[in-house]
Image (cartoon, rainbow, N blue to C red; front, side, top):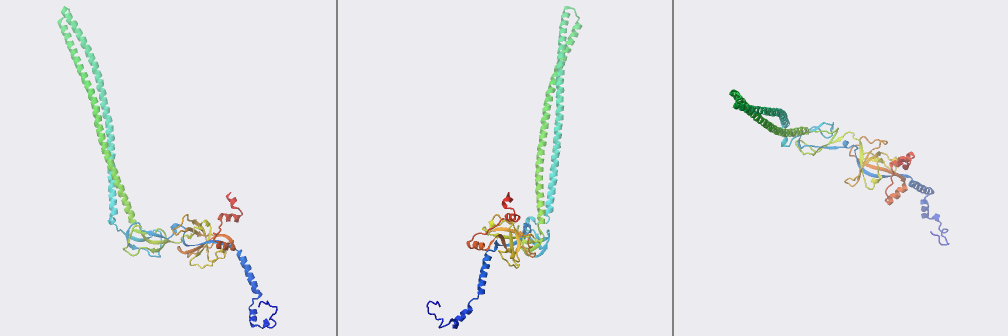
Length: 457
């Protein structure tokens, strides 16, 4: 009723007598409900100014922090045929334990005595190398002997030449003396002839002078012959020197040629020995590859090849092994939009699959069942899925991760950023703005009362 008319019907029909009015009065809210509404409004206003921790949420999985502690798949280095399995899935093995045995499938290695035969060939090649080395040494000694003999023979020939030259000089002096005596004898003979004609000297003295002149002539001729003979000896000595030098040069050249041939054969034998030694080492190493050994202590997780007699190719996966008690970490994949907000040392909260949790993403202190982590590595390039990989290790100052946690388990990470009021976070979410973030160094400096600017100085 709007009560627009000055004539009211309340006196004719009192409101208290109307059943509908009575029902309306009963449903009117009391004053305490208003108080509740006002109180809730005040609490909501207070709630808008409460602190809220901004965060980035991402999914990942548990892995090992060190690459050598992550699950790995063993490959066969050589192709072969599976002869025997020594383990089964779930077995714990130590480093060096035999996992399976392979047999040869290449016909080039079918010979069971191949290693021994190759060793014998290498030994024969080694003996051949020694023989050629001995021959080279013998030829070198022969060459040195020839060179020493050549010097001795040449010295002897030169001495003989010197003697021949001295004899030429001596014979020249004898010839000069014989000519002088011959001239004296001729002069005496001429004077004797003159005296004999004049009757001053007897015939017997003249004949004696003739005899002396004849002897002098004979001595002169003999001296001339001796001189010519000595000169021929000089020429022969010079010819002998040249002949000796040529002979020894020829012998030395022949020995050098044989030495070079022996050295060439030695190098070929040494090359053959090295080749056979290399083959022997390769065959010996290949024999060790028929047994596949565990590279580290771990648990056999899955056999990629099963059964006996199955062929395995080179580089083909055979079996998987997971290390025992690895140092766990979590691989998270974040969007490129969120990557600039992350730094090494940022705190991250984790929700692991299989562990009950009660999470308040904006209030990490009230969350129950979450575990702490610290960012330890951020990839500089994106993965195949277009996201960036972030590696997070356990926080040493937080609750230890569960012992039953295994590599490969799922994990949901919540990277904690800056603390802001709830109204600001709601406003940011409505406008699609990126979250704020803080620098770890700045936070530590503020906590110690030192500004970042002063710390940089």
